[in-house]
Amino acid sequence: MYAKCGTILSAEYVFNDIDSVDVISWNSLIAGYAANGYVEETIKLFRDMVVKGVIPDQVTFVGLLSACSHGGLINKGLDLFRSMTEEYNIEPLAEHYACIVDLLSRVGRLEEAFEMVREMKIEVNAGIWGALLSACRIHNKKFEIAQVAAEELSKVEPRKTSNYVLLANIHAGAGRWDEVERVRMAMNERGVEKQPGCSWIEDQNHLHVFRSDDDNGVLQQRQADMGNTLKTLTAQMKTCSASSLHSHTYYD
Image (cartoon, rainbow, N blue to C red):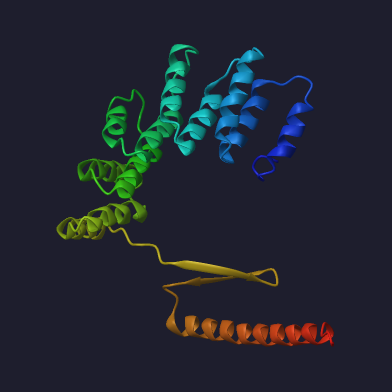
């Protein structure tokens, strides 16, 4: 709980107060370090765990590989991935492969990541294909890999519009407008519609939702209501500011 809230010191305090620390507690703190960007601390904690004689499991390496991915520790991540299978005899899950694919993709080693995906012994999930597709967008290259990843994602998530939009943006970034049009035609043929934009604001414990496809009359009324509310708030702020300035006026 503390780690997920970002209060790592409190998480460490509770961890150190445990009499008999099991692998679950170690994994919780490792995952907490990784999620909050404490890469070096994550690796050190893993070493301490091994020294204490606690045997890591699949969850342990998900946290470790995730930390390496976000920290850009390519060689360390690959070493840990190998030690997981060779030293600890742990069969990689889709989550482990996703971390390695994300790790390689972040630094532009897309061919290596794609080759790993093709050689996987387990079923490739949407997270892995999504990491590849996102990497192609970031590095703006490898259109063949992007096309394959998008096609596989369309099989796993046929109604998810963001995958099509991402592929279209990749082609658009390179000026491949014919390919952009093909992606749009594919969306129309499969009946995929782009989700409307949505914003929301909470006022007096009531949530107000605004969608880009709202009825024009309703939307205009909501916009007018928001405009009036903003004017009222602005006037109140000016009044409070003037009162505060008057009460703190100093004279020579």
